[in-house]
Image (cartoon, rainbow, N blue to C red; front, side, top):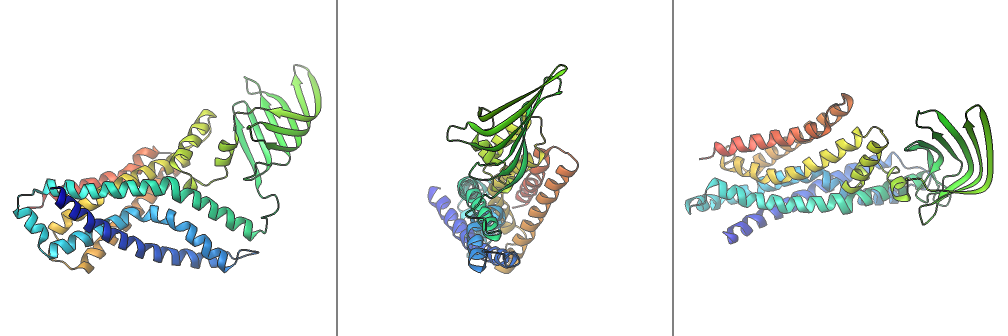
Length: 354
């Protein structure tokens, strides 16, 4: 049994790797062509090529389910053409046992996908986007960033510019009382976060509203201890697609703690989890089709079916995720719907196998 499981795994994994390389080549080509329109300043063709290469791990994460399905269809299809699967059935292996073996291959692919999506793809994607923006606007040796608002409990901060060096320029601080009335407004000419996550404010002028009086306090240097540390503030620089699952969980908790909208980030998190788990289903679905309607089909027919199902799954996932954000629907439910539907199709197809 272990020998057969390893044999099936080698067939599926080798085919999936080949399919992934082809898909990455096509995706990288389209990504590079798209970046040629964005060449500006110091961002030329070499930088666009580097950007494309750095984006490949994230692209591979997004294409893993499709690659797993097509790879399993081709790998198992080759075994079916050589009657090897028929011999396995004749030797006494049930469909359930074969499904469990190919699901093991899907588990290996899921682990690989999770590692890429957590530790490789997001940091390289963020680095690529930052490199592109700095090169396009020729800001590499100067302060780079844009104004932003952040909330920390009863305090709202307006930063003149937010960048990866955590130097923010002018900072406005709005403090609110328990009844949501404005308690104080402060302005610092310069601000930043030091290595111990302390906020250093320079040339601060604060106006405090107390009952029927107004008090103005000035200081050359002030040290604040907001709950927003460098790590949390750094997450606000990153698009959801460039965040790891840990970063998404941290930022979602921050948004909920401050009663801010977290729908976009919850949708990305649940979509990523559902997409990763779905990789286990793909080889089992391929097995059902190889034993069923594609038993005598060629590799071209299997490839076409894999592309169609993969595209349908991808489009359904994106459409439901976007619809959930627009209509304020539960992100977990809508993220799992395509995967549950795919599981239903797989279960039904397996029951039809004789």
